[in-house]
Amino acid sequence: MTGGDRIADVLARQGVRFLFTLCGGHISPILVSAKARGLRVVDVRHEATAVFAADAVARLTGVPGVAAVTAGPGATNAVTAVKNAQLAQSPVVILGGATATLLRGRGALQDIDQIALMAPHVKWATRVTRLRDLASSVERAFERARTGVPGPVFVECPVDLLYPPELVREWHGAKTGDSGGLRRAAERWYVERHLRRLFEDSPDATAPTRGAAPDAPDTETVRRARKLLASAERPVLLVGSQALGTPGEATLLAAAVGSLGIPVYLSGMARGLLGAAHPLQLRHRRKEALREADLVILAGVPCDFRLDYGRQIRRSARLISANLSRADLTRNRRPTLRSLGPSDLFLRALARDAVARPAWRPWLDTLRARDLAREAEIARDAATETGTGLNPLHVCREIEQALGEDSVVVADGGDFVATASYILHPRGPLSWLDPGPFGTLGVGAGFAIGAKLARPEAEVWILYGDGSVGFSLIEADSFVRHGLPVIAVVGNDAGWTQIAREQVEVLEDDVGTVLRPSEYHRAAEGLGARGLSASDPGDLASVLSEAKQLAGAGHPVYVNLLLGKTGFRKGSISL
Image (cartoon, rainbow, N blue to C red; front, side, top):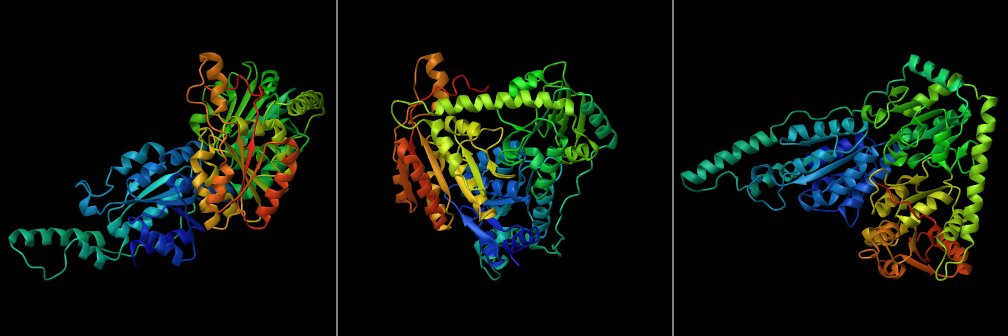
């Protein structure tokens, strides 16, 4: 068995179905062996896309996603996506190719210190130096990726561990019988000794490591939390992405949240947890609710910039925080009560004996009235003419009408996508994918590839800004080659509008923020996808309907929508 075979066997034992990659000579044996064992090898046009796709699969299935990247530039190209996975707490295994062990540090092709490169951005990074350690190292990587606070891991796999030993000996000129002087004999002895150690073998087959079952929340902590909840007059629950860390139990979490009977705001991957129109779910004016609440429960939500570093929660409010991360439990605000561990298990335990109080009804009614008022404002704004192009609020309302009941929305953009987050109602659990706290542009194609593979029957939409689509437009080719019929909607307002809003007003200069109203759908057509476009409100519904029909027939389709300007998100810059 080659090293590629050993790695592929581990992947199969771990339940991995997809291996994402951009090919390279350093990793070819991994790809070939994975294919031979029935894994679907999905090659893309940029290493970041491969890692993003692995990230999406991990989020939607709970099985760590896997990407293989070649040495040097392959690894450096992947770093942004790896960092995004780290901050989003996604369990991703990155297999990195590397130069031969005997040539490391001698100026070999694409030879850099990849461990130093990756170490700050992963939970664990290791360099394998012997064939006998290869499978166990990859097994350990899966364990590290999924236990505790999930995150990415990196395993460096030198090329001479992956190919057949006899071929490696030929590469190093170590064939028996080579002639030469004393110097050549010494070199041959050194190489042979190195190769013996490299290939010295012992049984490396290990049982797959699944990680220990997460600890149940402390009974006393749950009891105290239940007591705080029972005495609250204006409680609010915030549920974040981390609470969806066990995708197979999302329905249990949704049932628990619903039974608590308190107003709830959902963010990140938790969007859609309660369906499109649950009576407890609120979407607007969250900041006001937090400032008025006397009890706030944060489930997998840190007090970072998204909560204004905790300042959105009034100081006199009691704060309960449940989080896998010890650091996030107390980040910027010290909670009244903390539960270190899976926030979904905490909510499920809290809900077992909790009883919704009738006294909360006026509070919920107040928040619901604010929500309805905000929805009415958005509807009025959506009907406003922009002068030229489509009103982005009207566009998002039409997309909301077009979304299928089994749909996944991938968010990749700034101003247009943030506008959509106010309007779209994800249809169910695990139906919204956004980058997470890193705010990375360019996740769209990779996330959509992973989503369509993990949920082939779902209608997968990408919401692009015209800035973000530039990062992964080439992946239209990947959608076509792999038969992945996604719907990509490009909100094209010819600019980096989220940045321009503040830059132009504060600094009175639009430098660097202006784009062209380019025909992105034409570029996608050139790559084999179908392309549609609209600039007239009267055409919008029919164009979106046609896009759904094309995707249903098996074609990836790009819809280029020419937008006008609005002041909807003025003053929304985050620091």
